[in-house]
Length: 378
Image (cartoon, rainbow, N blue to C red; front, side, top):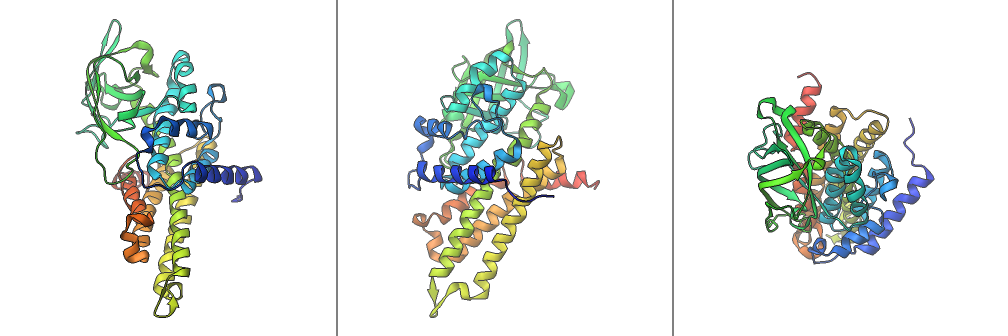
């Protein structure tokens, strides 16, 4: 069992981290996602097609090498919203298009997705179907020309700025999860309406909103995979998302530890560095322990995916560990910085706000616990 990175992996990590720091320096402006040049910059850095085939402009990487680069991106880029938006674009949208789209659809969309010329949004969640994706209210009725979509999706990441959407709808209500079908469609499709971005607590630069379908015709080539295969396609993309997207949060955890160590070494109280106080040092030690534990679980999950596995147990353990560590670590950082941690200028409170939704999207922490319990036979 080898825990060491290869020299190529180390160089790639360092290159991505340095490039992210240069390309996306800390700023008080959290609206950069609306600037298409930011997406093109991501494309030039190769961060939008890490796991996509080289024939479409991707890097053709496996899960572990993809995760290492996303981790470096999350560590180097202070805008976690941008890291999240780019990762959702790749793992929740490009992965199912790459794996299940027709050759024409892949050729038409994936090069633009990799370059940043095309922004993709993931439309799965509904007001009444968050974790229970087998009961989607959005319907798709087959016609001679394709499928007519009707209903509304919510919390569509990148939805307000997306050029294409990957969505899921019920085609056979009697078949439960076997009656869900996946689709990809253009934003300009008649009958498709996109809302303004939600005003959110965190991940501000990753716009999310509602998408409505009213007799929205999707041609037959817009079906991903086969009719009724949507649930399996969604779970396939979720394995990539719950593993590789959350590598960006491991990068955030590294940034938190670095900031806290630096602060504890330089901040003085009662005539001493606060790092000399055991309560402070122990808090940072616990942050580091959670970070490394989460990192190892994530790496194991990705290694397993690269070797033909990707068990639900290890994917859920990884997602749960990373997201809970991110929230706990950010709370610890706020406490350690004290009043400074409550000020926006320091960036600590921003990391806390960006960490909180990680326990909600891609399956809540409680859903991950249910999955783990089920895998344990409970």
